[in-house]
Amino acid sequence: MSGPLASASVERVRAALVAASAPDTIVALDHTARTAEDAAKAVDCPLGAIVKTLAFMVDDRLVLALVAGDRRCDALALGRAFGSASAAARADADRVRAATGFAIGGVAPIGHPQSLPVAVDPSLARFATLYAAAGHAHCVFVTAYDSLLAMTGGTPVPGLGIEARPG
Image 1 (cartoon, rainbow, N blue to C red):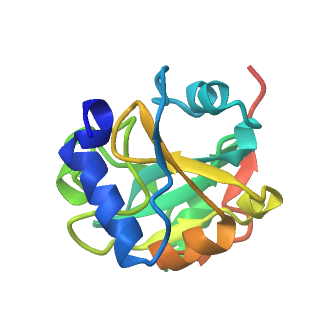
Image 2 (image 1 turned 60 degrees about the horizontal axis):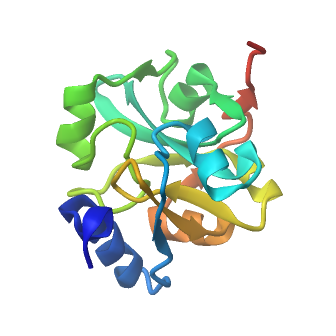
């Protein structure tokens, strides 16, 4: 294997798929998947079928929100899902890399050096096939909603993914 598929970050995602008894569905893309819009174009799927892995701080701990590409994360719902009265705040790039091992734009929902709390947008279940970052801006893996929940240990949080603001 060469190119992005051989990167250490992608290998961590591959190892997490194997550990979860999931198939290795990682694919290298000709174009970047750094944003949900880019990923949807690259794999030719609806924007909502892209899993955005977003890192937030809830009080003093880093948590992940897995949100459909056509939605935005409700920071207050995320904070409440983890027992806080306050809205979650976006984590900075250094903290994201330290906790997940991935750079922003390639954060995968699996393959982290330590277990992280995960909230999942139930609207992802609208799609039979989902695409998530695989540790590199040119790689994604294919999965399904139930598999994503099982692999991440994530909890569905109603109201987590809210309609994106126009423009």
